[in-house]
Amino acid sequence: GRAESSLGTLADVNLNAAVSKEACPLNLAPTASTTAALALGDALAVAVLDARGFGSDDFARSHPGGALGRRLLTYVRDVMRSGDDVPSVGLDATLSDALFQITAKRLRMT
Image (cartoon, rainbow, N blue to C red; front, side):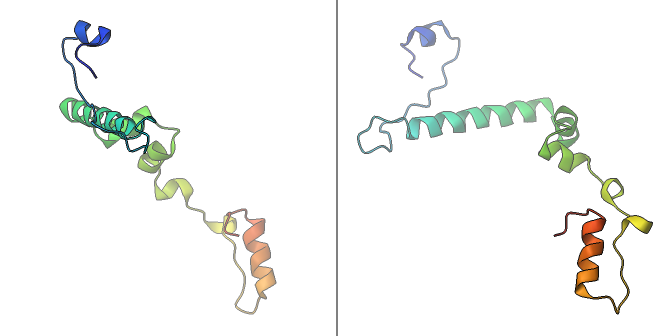
């Protein structure tokens, strides 16, 4: 931001992500400036992660219910089906019989 702004004058450090021109043809809509701010925020987050030695195990513990945490914490044993839970038909079964078995076992394959 601007070092001369009211917030800038109070800050110990000013990380300037100013852009000379927005991508908007009218130079009005915040386009390039929002991208620059996002990139600066991402860079700061990654620097803090690195400085703290934050690894995938830490991330998984912090986000156990989210898609990324689940990806790090889920093992084959957690999703593997066996025995009667696996759809199975003989070699002479019709395709209709096979689809019925897959659907009946609720494996979300259809």
